[in-house]
Length: 476
Image 1: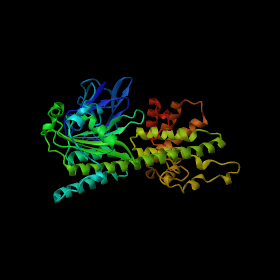
Image 2: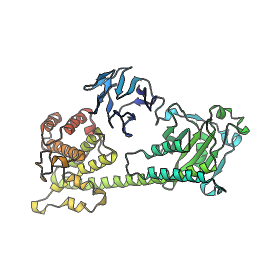
Image 3: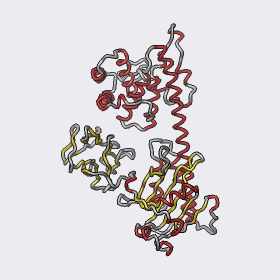
Image 4: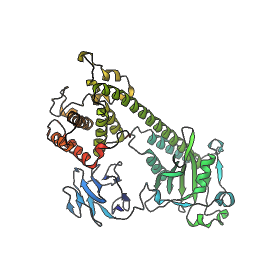
């Protein structure tokens, strides 16, 4: 097992375990590991596995990537002790698993004492609606609570689905409350167990200590739970492990999604901070309600998109069966998703490309008299979910040299249109000559001046790593 570790800069000490998927490094928050360096591109470099070894390549960055002070040309095999340098940031490649991954559940230590609630600890447990109103709340506390609720709502209202909103919210709560650690546990559908899905801490050296008893009670009874100052309360004397581990104050509230308790939101402060109070309990409960509503809306959108995809697939298959080209749309959709992932497009763009790939040819279907061909695209214009997809579909045959049916100029073709054009061309040539070697077809596409050469080279890479032929039924 191998990992990388940031050696300097704002994220010094941050580590990331390398696995079966490629890991991007860059300034963007969506990069696999983010670095805050002015010389870094949004997606600057990439580490990828080949046969148990790891290679690094530059992603056409402006300032280049260096390995042991030598500028990286093409791809290079990483050896233990190698230093990847991006701008002034140095990243060490070494063996072992990362212990400080921000999203790693391995950082969590559990305290599993069944008597922690019944015999030793006394917690104030309240249903949110039963929390007594505080008298003479300080104005500053009111302002702080409103500010936190506003910022959490602002994060959750972001329409960019590529952003992990759980991470953003927990990061904000750690700084605003403040808290030493913030975690979300959700019930796993297959096993029924509560597992950590998001883990955030105030620093890479912090390893959360979690009480299973607190989590179980909160989840099973659907009640907000607050433990006050554990280290100063004499009732904790019989549970020395709590004091030794530095658990000072905990808030654990239910996470309700779609009317059902599906997990908990857990915040803790260590020995260095004051205890949470009743207002904090109420505030975090309100944040959990917002998180639950956001998760419910996201799940509803996913179900809706899955239903739309199934409906579109059924329609396209019916048309293709009549035209004796069954599977053409789904293969093109699969290629679009692979190219979108290789180009580091976000999930929204990849989903749009998947639908556009599926529908790329439907306006050319007809039966008998060409003059009576069904205007499928015109009929689909009334589907609200396709309003951003259909304009892309109409560009599927456009070319950079403006020789396509609509004579669209090169500058009007964005990266999604260029990806669709390459995927559609690859599918067209593969369908017309099923026995042809895919590598030969791709080499011809690379030489085609009407197609984006960077995209056709990505197509070649997707062919080599097999992603071009992965299951296209899975949503991006």
